[in-house]
Length: 558
Image (cartoon, rainbow, N blue to C red; front, side, top):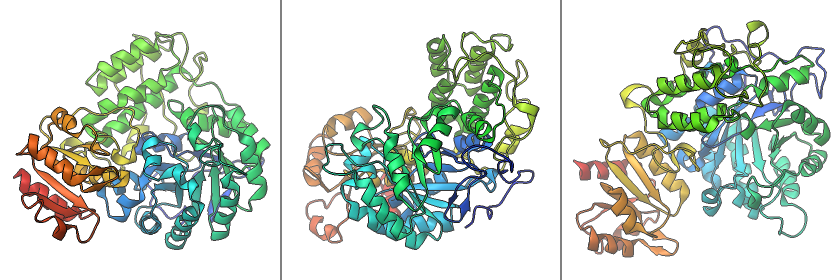
């Protein structure tokens, strides 16, 4: 699928390229395979951040490409409904190029997931994650842990390139640890990836063991860009438009990714574009900050229904973090149970109790600038979508038609049947959730105990889609205490975990909670015959057999 083949809502224009006379590192953005980008400023994939509402905001402010949250290749390969919906292309962004990032460790699953993402979910490019340093991800052999096995990385890339039919890219770290001997593994690995047909490599120049500590070493990015015949994208520590352009010029990379710095500052993309094009970029006043934050809130509400109130406790805090009284307003936002009230608190923080431009904090979010005008001319934002406009003083929402354009046709979950996002660790690919939702009393609760993160995530996503509250544990440590605390209605237990025997754990559960239903799972084909005599009074299913798992749960609970 090309970047221009997606369906487009009426009134949404193609992303406009820079003017013909634009100065800066280039007159147009780079090409990733056959996908031409309008500029070199891309939204980084961020678990728990780069969801559909945030991707819309980034696109409205001029991101040349948006990327999904981390998506499990295993969940997609096994037709996980929740993961598919999480990463499905957003038609409201029109032809703006869109990438889906996959994580995992099984080459065949990457191939099937890449085929599905390109053929069914609207991805213009597929990105392979060899970079995530999260403890949960690395412990399962995914993300940056793959850099310990370059041959496996190459097999994964080869399978994805062969199956995808769209450009495949890779995001990586220099290596797993600076203690590894010799040259950083990324140099030899990236050359091999280019030889297999990978279209671009993004480098976050910190070792995996550094996570996000210390400073990114952009000299490694420059060395990689000088060696590779394919585009290199730089990532790490870019927090201003000036720094973004300096990194482009100094490193020789084709593009840069903006990540953590755009949380609460999506207009950073517009600032980068203005500087790159040689245009003036007036400071963003509090009215526009409020407009962006309240639009973000309404998009989340459309996507997640009443559960958005819990996510907004962290999201709205991004927009006020630089206010002098940010802590007090954050406490009020976090104690609120109503989205409208949260937006009112935000308005008071940024615009004052009367809605005037001059809030209760002395510094405006995003750097403490004095109040400034809204977007120049009030015209479309870079990227083809209308820029969010300020609200009328005292109004509950936004004064312009922008929210209707953004929300229309988004395929959001609304009303009483929305899925319970973030009700458990690992849901929706969010491996380190910033805000967990409380358990809803009318939900049945399921405890999943498995040492494979992708299986925990698959079960969590699918059963969460069915309306269950899901709690996960990666091994049997403290299992009885966890059962006492969570009081699950059903336990799904992996039989063979590293350092833990599932059958021993089953016996422990029987001894203390005799009536608690336990479903035993295994990936081995012969496990049912081996366990019939031991677990005759318990349910037994094969891992990944979601149809049988759902059937057993239904039998138990009815």
